[in-house]
Amino acid sequence: MATKFLLTFAICRLIVTVGLTLDPTELLRLELEGQLSLDPADVGSASRDFGGMRTAHPMAVLHPASPQDVARLVKSAYESAHGFGISARGHGHSINGQAMTGNGLVIQMSGSRGNPAPPRVSEKSMYVDVWGGELWIDVLRSTLEYGLAPKSWTDYLYLSVGGTLSNAGISGQAFNHGPQISNVYELDVVTGKGELLTCSKEQNSELYDAVLGGLGQFGIITRARIALERAPRRVRWIRVLYSNFTAFTQDQEYLISLHGQPQKFDYVEGFVIVDEGLINNWRSSFFSPRNPVKISSLNADGGILYCLEITKNYQESNADTIDQEVEALLKKLNFIPASVFTTDLPYVDFLDRVHKAELKLRAKNLWDVPHPWLNLFVPKSRIADFDRGVFKGILGNNTSGPILIYP
Ligand SMILES: Cc1cc2nc3c(=O)[nH]c(=O)nc-3n(C[C@H](O)[C@H](O)[C@H](O)COP(=O)(O)OP(=O)(O)OC[C@H]3O[C@@H](n4cnc5c(N)ncnc54)[C@H](O)[C@@H]3O)c2cc1C
Image 1 (cartoon, rainbow, N blue to C red):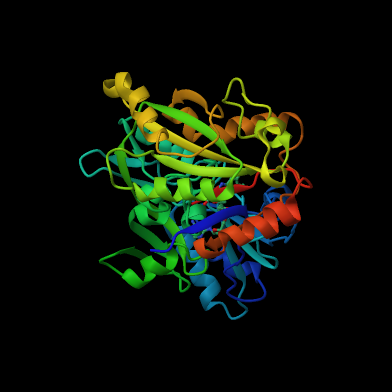
Image 2 (cartoon, protein in one colour):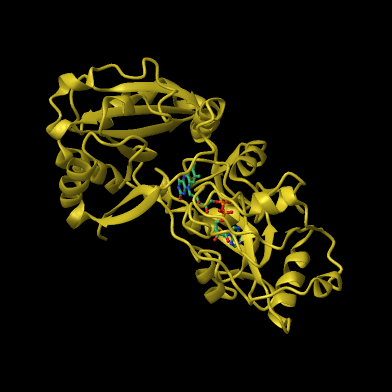
């Protein structure tokens, strides 16, 4: 299988649009259990997203009280003589208006008004059933009560299950477990005709395959059954630096080739350091000291360094061997000697690491700013060209903000 590198700078866009105009009397006949809101605060928040670059004002926002509410509304749009647009919105952390619609309705799947159904964990079958608008942080909290946790994550947990399953859900665990969409046993989906269907690999499999990673275009996820594993207690989190891009990518590839083996890291990511300030960026607050080496002393090629991020999960039962396990794995890598920096923290703090940075940025009014991010899949055969042309060529010392590289 060819290795690809996912470079995180942003996301793609699409909206379910069923028609053009809205007749409010049609909606009153639907007898929805949830709240159909025209409140300017609700409409205003549904007309923006994390990207902060687009606006589209819906005519109303539905806070559904059940999957049937979602089905009734979509069915009425499908059957309506006039037609109207519908977009499912999770936590609105898209970049380019993917969860918006002008001249139609937004179904607010995540929200402060509570979800229609709380997470239900099956310890015996190791899965959790969750509402499509549930945030991953709340999925984690619910499953940890049973000592269990989902296997595959995104770096940030204040995203909805339906929102990340409509994309892919990628983080440093993906080499081992696949993206989040590979860890879903079953879905309940409201189709474009307003039918509420259960789908899985065995049942309505075309719908299941289309909805997972379907950019919200093939139906609205109202329930997802997510695979669980026994939750680790703690995480050893390690960063090492490279000045040579080939050595960096070869080590990333080597580490992901260990997937499925007992002696491997549990998370492999990395980022590009185009300026000294970035080593102390918003993802670094767990490390103390944050930066053990003077970057300018490392003779970086073109002034650029690459940071490999790896973790090893452990339980109390193997706490006394974790040092040797990490040491043995690090010995196989070709990073700059003396550039290793390590921290150790509870599993939940590692998974929720970006939220700590969010709180700091919010305190400085730097969270709700425009985010012109971009995600790219780059094939292994062109990643060295990409380094020469983009990291060293275009970005050089002229940029700030995180540039992540997932092998
Ligand atoms: C700080 C930050 C960090 C991030 N880190 C990562 C990361 O590490 N890995 C990663 O993969 N992504 C990451 N993302 C991207 C994120 O996964 C996507 O933007 C995701 O769509 C956001 O989820 P949301 O609930 O906010 O979705 P929204 O923006 O609300 O919706 C996204 C799309 O999904 C559709 N949708 C929403 N709910 C449903 C539903 N129930 N059924 C069907 N369609 C639905 C919407 O219509 C829209 O098309 C990050 C984003 C941010 C802001």
